[in-house]
Length: 298
Ligand code: A3P
Image 1: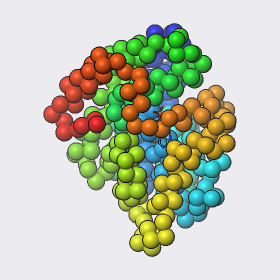
Image 2 (image 1 turned 180 degrees about the horizontal axis):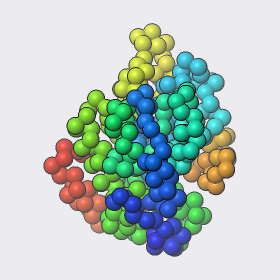
Image 3 (image 1 turned 180 degrees about the vertical axis):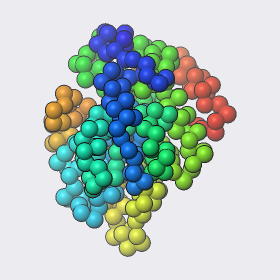
Image 4 (image 1 turned 135 degrees about the horizontal axis):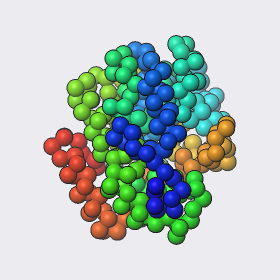
């Protein structure tokens, strides 16, 4: 039980990662029932590392012939209603196969827990991750606000402590990243690694990389008329977070308010939360876990 959340969330360990019972059940159903197609594109991530942004960008890229920046469903619906999430919607996804019309499926499952057909089908995987300290801060506010707990009632030190123990949503965080990283070294043509910080710094070139990787590259003409920049602007934090649907809406049948997916959208908010000691602890831990892997988190 997450003690910093006053025991309001209980997580279980399944195949070496932690999450809620409901999501473990969804993951098991996916392992049993989901059959990947070679044309599928998996959008994978640990929670709070840019999933919402990646889903928006990938959706805008693959639907750009149908919709532009003034007609996109992203303007009127939360992106999580546009791109399905494997562990939550497996029955729906399976029922719509093979012609759902959209190749995108998102998941937080670690690489080693993906349905076996994902590796076997050779479909594309895009992985987004983020520096650990901002991921901790983002998750802290997301879960605290989802439970309507004030900051005084949800000690931040507790969230840092549990993260270090590997007890975070779909954690250990480092194992999540390393699982996909190792798979990407073996199959670089199949797994694209994106970093939230890189996307922030240079969205246009990362959007081009993403489009090319998922088989929807921009033509020279499209680039000339500004299609890449339009997608970047459509999916920017400033644009999406200010839409009525994302400020006040709730997903159908869901309990979490849409606004919880849009908090600050910045690189480095950890500086407003971490003591020097906490910073050193996380930096040291991540260095230890990632040393020798060729992966740098910042
Ligand atoms: P912060 O809490 O630091 O603001 P996820 O989508 O994986 O749940 O991650 C949520 C984080 O991504 C939140 O970070 C959220 O504000 C940020 N985010 C959501 N949409 C974004 C966008 N279009 N551009 C940049 N950041 C975005």
